[in-house]
Length: 222
Length: 196
Image 1 (cartoon, chains in turn cyan, orange):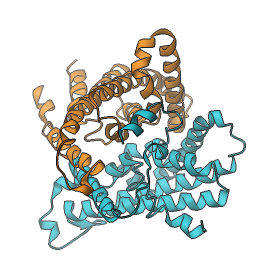
Image 2 (cartoon, rainbow over the protein chains, first blue to last red; image 1 turned 180 degrees about the horizontal axis):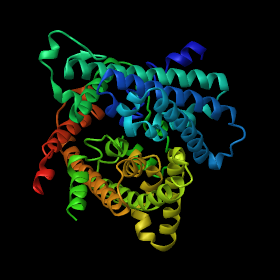
Image 3 (tube, each protein chain N blue to C red; image 1 turned 90 degrees about the horizontal axis):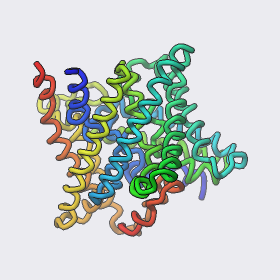
């Protein structure tokens, strides 16, 4: 796999949100408008990049049995750093993201990439993977944010759009709209990838797969 | 007392963790296929939420705040929750094997469940007292359970439905979740007005 392929797989082929279906909670919660979607995407990308680099650098040192707690502590450290930076330099963003900023710790994408990629690959490859996945996450969030902001509040990034601002569908910016838009996007991805061989993600994509005892039950269902 | 009832009811209905706050979506989509696994998961979540709040609230108030280490909140809380889940699993396995058998499979998954970390942080952010925090955690857990159980009923109906091919699986589940969430919006404002 070339470096470019490694980067671009995070955006399309293995898009963390739409294909791997990881990190659904922040996706639904922070895509109400483009600004907070961008902020969430950027914060998660920084954490993902840093944690991927450090975890892959330490991959030979961390004992296999305690790797999950180690990863969680490392990720929590980076999240705290990002949290303090955002509080200091972008207080408005801190207000908008609220509880979801510290909750990047439990964002499945980050732990998932640590498990699936960073602990098996070199530092440079892991950094590229982190950037690609972060870009994929951010793009998806912005896409959802755009749909919800344009049709929900008739503006884009705060700038009003002439006709739509008088006819907004405000339900899209609320909770049900989040589920609805996300469902439609995944249906669209399913439609587009209909003819391609379906890669089974299921339990392999889940960060808790190593701990999980439900594997048999779930894979039997699929 | 009224305040406690308001906190409890609004945590269950208005600020429902899954349907309005979007916390704990993964288990919501993952294990709501069958009623018994939905119930098991929700019971485990309620259990861990209560214990986690009972441990993290004193840690924040008596340890982190006096020694001016408030910024360590995220790291300390996630570690405490992870350790707690392991501990609960070991204790259950040793002393109440029957309960371990029914809840055991869900426990490791709960460590990375954002609803648990979310409720502990929100309790601190909202400035709740210890009792209020416990009530809020109970309410949030019950709300989680309500959404899970309701939704497992919806999903069992979906199974036989004739839907477009690209909507099969996750998309139709999300659209159904959207409608369920819409019904919960009807509770907005009701609870405050009950006690006027």
